[in-house]
Length: 288
Image 1 (cartoon, rainbow, N blue to C red):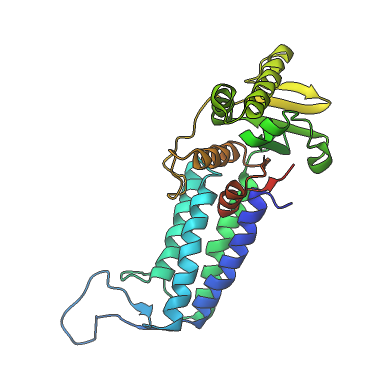
Image 2 (cartoon, rainbow, N blue to C red):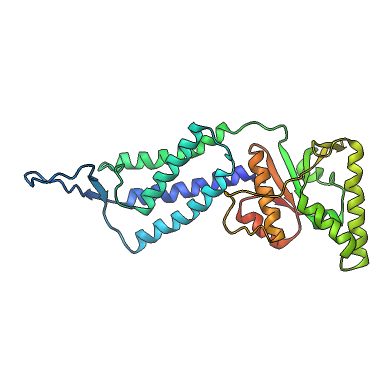
């Protein structure tokens, strides 16, 4: 199973192939407005520029630009509070790739030598890839987040050992606990209300094992931890609407992944709409 980080790196490789291919197929020409004997000097003028290319070449740039922008939003979540050196690399590589795809005027980084241009394009991507080596280690290789329906169907959070291995930490999100509370009282059917009560009793029973906000043992090397904070960030994908329960759940998992970048955060859900949204942001899921 590909983790969030695995998918990011795989997507980056696809973007790199497109980006370097675009640079390879692009031509440059001299755009320096300064001419000998003209008597006029333009300070800081751009010397080399991209030869205008419309049609298929412009479409290729657009097809690379859109996924790269979306990718950067997801990648930056791994570095919520970057140190100055990391922040500099993030901004520098992103800005340069965008400038070579958008091709606005005033770009002084364009070389007349194609090999140098290709080397620079490769370097842009490689610097982003190498940042992943700076991610902190994690006590848990695998973290699991269950959606509400999964807990309603079966509140045993130790049920994933056959799928994920014997050691993992389960996170129970605030939105899930609220939904279970609501279903206890106002579920559509008596069976749903009873199943919600069963899930509520199981979750509350974990408090007998210790501090659930720190993490307590459930069985063997399976632990559970209750989260208390709802998602809040200016860096989430713009299409996530936090007033929509499914989107709020996905946002919570994304921010949990950003808090634990070296851990594989996996969602347990059988909800097809939820699975689609998780795939859109590169989060892995299992169906119990």
